[in-house]
Length: 520
Image (tube, rainbow, N blue to C red; front, side):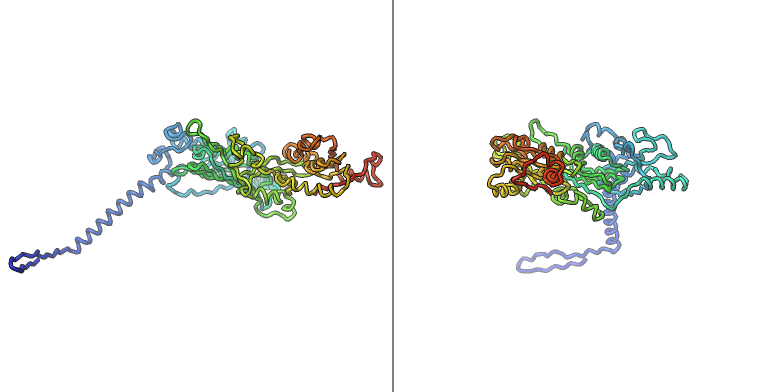
């Protein structure tokens, strides 16, 4: 270090002495190394505490020995409830087991799985059905020859010990009984909102609901696998003999999304009421008197895979019923009113609210009786009803009048004095309703081959055959004294009475002034 002094002006002032610090390379190197080591130590400790610790705890041989499992319980009882007092091991043991239904058999399967380590999963559970080792006594609830395997237990050892000849004989027997399986299936997609959050966060309750859906649908659950997520939510997938069922939940939002795919021949649409009953658990009011919005459901059904052209064209779900009703997901409401098979045809009636024309909120308000415009005019906000025969759309609630008026009145007005009218088909009763509006009519004969269609329409499509606004008529058009409903083949009926070789010409049926065709 060196210094110097200078004087200036009249009063000399001493200037600061400059200095120089000498730092060795060894000091610089040691300082940098110690900083790196300190940063590494802090980072490694944070990783162990925040990431690796929870992950190892999930894979711990005995979870009850790990302090990492001492975390808040998001299951059914909530914080501090009974479930919170149980160990993780006990909660896993409470998971419901897949149950084999009576009369069902599951073929031998090879089970493969891999669990991926992630700190975002609170619990993981896997439950299986498999054949017992050496034919030991199975659990009673599963029927003879079956046992439950939990979380990777070796369930295939017994099958591996069988002699090759024994396995070949069983394979031959199964192949003879097995039906043809096409590379095709059905896919059901369901979204539900406004569900109880506690239910959506309970791995056990959701697993039980999934098993009940499978059993009540007469499907076969081979195994299922569930994960409770952190901080909340559950994801599950069930492996079916027919394919799979899976879902994911958002407890905070009260939402679950579910899908069910099967490659079997049994229809999936009838499963919808089961899913709604088991999964659409309504929210409970937080305070007394709180209005709780009921669960809302949107769903769609789609045919998947590849079928033969003939099989596809004959399937009612591949016609209007599928294209314009089942495959559409964004209807505010879609409900099966009735679906039945008569001797002659399949009959489906659906109730639907299309958001383009109406909305669910206005419909709900129309039922409230609160004095609102909607409540005073509920007829304007009713859901539409749609009739399908063999999958082909026939008529709708809001299109019924315009369709049947155009079908009936031009011909009726063209005749100067129509007294006797015959209707071929017309099972809904709407054509008969329009005919009876003409005061000149003395006799209206409706010849419909399918009596089931007439009864379905009377019960589920009442406005189609409502004659209460026709002067001198009855509430149901079929009870009008001028009306006669004959459930026979219309072509055969006419030939028997009006052809030269008719067997019933002697009945002397008078000719008709008007004949209206209302049949495909």
